[in-house]
Image (cartoon, rainbow, N blue to C red):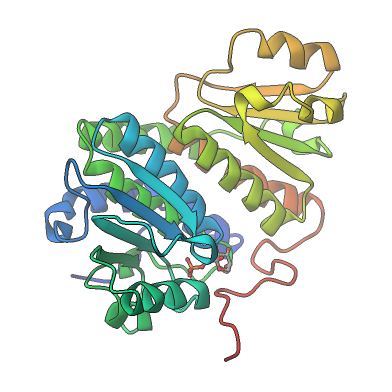
Length: 312
Ligand code: F1P
């Protein structure tokens, strides 16, 4: 498999901006190479747990909700540090760009030590990383790897590959890539760029994407963000809505929510027609734009390393 660099329509600017702009191409490549990863992709009816840390955990959550909604089988998602090792699964899917994250490697070791009968598989960007030896089967998406600390294309490409394995998934990912190109061609909405707080909402798999969009804004732009299941918004989070603040919904807003947000004076961003993965691309772009507007370098997130490798 070649590791040639995907082409970016934005060859200048922060590395994060360059890499995130290659997502449509990466998703299409995942579609094209899907059959090479048949050993890794969950099979219909399997009881599956998906795991990771940070962005990878949020991709796990999005996929778990998508798979279960598609009727492919019970699918849970856990932060690697919170995985219930004693629970019986047919397959455990670990997502880790670096392949070095301590909690993920510890979990795989704990599953082995516990004599778990689960087939343990991983998606990573690095063929030479320890996760390759720790998992039974590995999808190495080296061509989607990133220089950026802040993850964009590896994470969404892993999600695209997993999604492509679901019924109707190939068509959905192809359509998402088209929508993502449109998102890359659109400038961030000025009210969203100028906001001083952002709350991301979603239902089903959109909730995992909302968590990821909020993380991106925190990592790249040091922004105050929150994320909730959309129907939880009225149960407290609405209290911080105000003029100059923004609410962003992945998918269609639940009935009446747009009016509730309007009543607070906050700005609502909603685009139900676009695929939620394309909306995540728009949120990533917003994160880069907010960072730059604040004089921050999105390639140098505060206090963050590319992978968390703990001593001992
Ligand atoms: C997971 C992760 C990233 C986060 C930061 C630290 O890494 O938590 O999501 O943005 O870079 O590492 P990985 O296990 O996917 O390599």
